[in-house]
Image 1 (tube, rainbow, N blue to C red):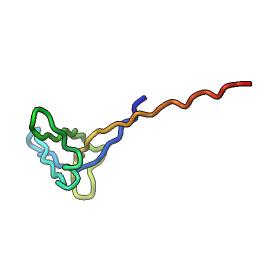
Image 2: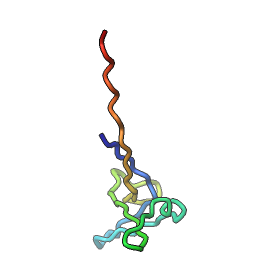
Image 3: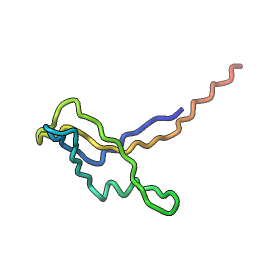
Image 4: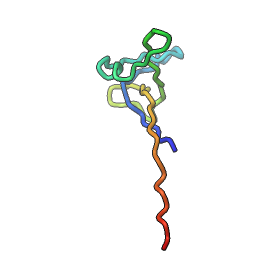
Amino acid sequence: MKTYIKNYIGKGTQNPKLDIVKVTLRMDQVLNFKHEYAGSEYITFEVAKMVQPDKFGRTHTAYVTSHETVKKPKKAKSS
């Protein structure tokens, strides 16, 4: 069983006239999630609309999804 964890790395604001979201990321957080493929480094992240804008008017949040495998506990043997 996998448990998914959202590691928040930034927030953004949608342009009211366009379908564009400007996102600001903290590099010290982002670099923790870089991965390599075919000799190049990448960052894969997701942008989602927030339920309610924050006090700064930001409407979206950015996060990296990671997962951990959780083992089911073994059933105790009955005597």
